Amino acid sequence: MYLFFWLFVFIISLVVLIKAADYFTESSEKIGIDLKIPPFIVGIAIVSIGTSLPELATALIAVSKGQTEIAVANAVGSCVANILLIVGIASIVAKKMSIKRSLINLDLPLLATATTIALFTFSDQIVTFREGVILMITYAVYTFYIFSSKHERKILNHISDKKESSHEKKDLKNKLKKIWNFKPKVEIGVILTLIISSFFIYLGASYTVESIVNIATILNIGTALVAMSAVAIGTSLPELVVSVGAVRKKKYEIALGNVFGSNIFNILVVVGLPALISDLKIDNLTYIYGIPFLIAATILYIFSGISRKIYNWEGMMYLILYLLFITKIFGIV
Image (cartoon, rainbow, N blue to C red; front, side, top):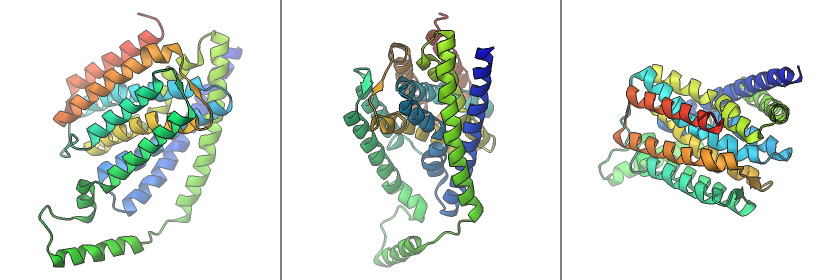
């Protein structure tokens, strides 16, 4: 009976956490649209961060309660779910996802670099304060490159590929001045939504961690197992909703950009920020199964990104691999 009670608390708190993050993301997305940010950037910088708030909130609360192994397990499990589960389902729904934007010059190298740096910090099964700083600096550099890249500036400011004349440069200067002085009208309701949803994100995350610890204790299993499976899937639901919704509207850039941004945010910020508070332990289950699957999933995703097309048969392959991942961490096979 005690188990069912905490399962109920887990489900309710996770629903509250996800729904609050959804409202937070919706408000943030409105701001992005008002600023006329390109779709891929909306996905990679705004939607992805908003949909990754459940992971971050869960990690921070877990660390505050001394359950540091939950942070890395949840981040790794969510990254694997984002690629194998979410991209898999989105590809099957779309039948064929294709994007015009080339990912090979900037996005894929950034994803590969961020993942590699994170893996180095995981190698000794502990993430220290110093390594947390490295991860956060890496995310800051990543954000800088995303927003200052020549390609994105051209999209944002509608600059042609040809060399600008002195007159064109003057026009560009005026445009930049207008952007600098631009003051978007933000409704009071949007601000209130951000504040209220932030509170419920904290509340949902707090009870989610509490229920994880109790369920793991009752079933005599590691908290990392629950975090890497049930919590990872649950906290990845916002990404699933966003990606599938974008695919149905044929906005493939947002769907893929969401996963790109979420994974980089998870491995750098969801791990890096809590590490600034306390050293994070990496349990054997995450180290033996979670990290290898993260590497494999990232490599597969990079190859799919190079072709700029993901077919439904690839999506099915992704889902099969995710099923294998779940069976492995539960010791079924």
